[in-house]
Image 1 (cartoon, rainbow, N blue to C red):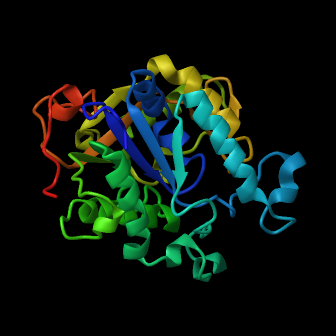
Image 2 (cartoon, rainbow, N blue to C red):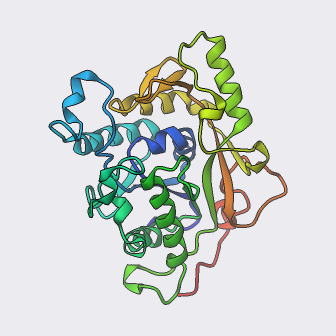
Amino acid sequence: MTDQPSRRRLLLVHAHPDDETINNGATMAKYAAEGAHVTLVTCTLGEEGEVIPPALARLAADREGGLGEYRIGELAAAMRELGVDDHRFLGGAGRYRDSGMMGVEQNTRPECFWQAEVDEAAALLVEIVREVRPQVMVTYDPNGGYGHPDHIQAHRVAMRAAELAAEPVYRRDLGDPHAIDKIYWNCLPRGVVAEGLEQLREAGTASVPSLDDLPGLVDDKDVTAAIDGSAFRDAKAAAMRAHATQITVDGPFFALSNGMSMPIVAHEFYRLVHGEPREDVPENDLFAGIAAAEGGTRQDAAS
């Protein structure tokens, strides 16, 4: 547990290494630099990821393997670039295996995250929540952003853990109850993405996806928080480069294994799904309105 009760504490729950940097890298770097305690929980090692560099192709699951172990190092390097020093794997590294994309054989393996019993996995996260006692949690929406089974499961586990962590009678062996003030889901507003794609076209980028081909976009009006991480764009880009098996960085743009270029965005967007909504939407601070994070005090769930 932190030794500063009023310190800002942010918890992020992600499915695989690199998800955190793509979705929240600038946000994480910003709050870490401001002195917040940033905790990242990653649910799998990403063993089923496609490997981009030919020199590392042997690591792929359908070849020699070992990608998951390699990605532990990539994630550690990325966290150093973002200034985050509290990172954990849910249940320990390798407790849950990457499930692969929806509909593949890997989804049926008993050790994969998709097959995990939600309450069992949530209990592992409850222990972290009650230790760290975050005021804010960030995770995916119910579709995991784009339908990946591990993203969907991370959403289910995170939301269930938040519920259970606040229950006074639930598993006191996991720590004293704690209620998270605000929960946000990552989101990408359609208007912002459209502007980014236009930047790619103006730069003469060869492979620019169509807006209609990008899943999980939300209407701009649904965004309730917009974090300006412009000062941390370079840190986010460096963290992306650290995830070299999964991401190629070319100046202000990046691409995943599909080869489609996208701009590296330093403005990151969220939807508030738990907590008191504010009139000044979109918020520019995930901790806005939380007394304990502003130097005051707050009563946790009854012990």
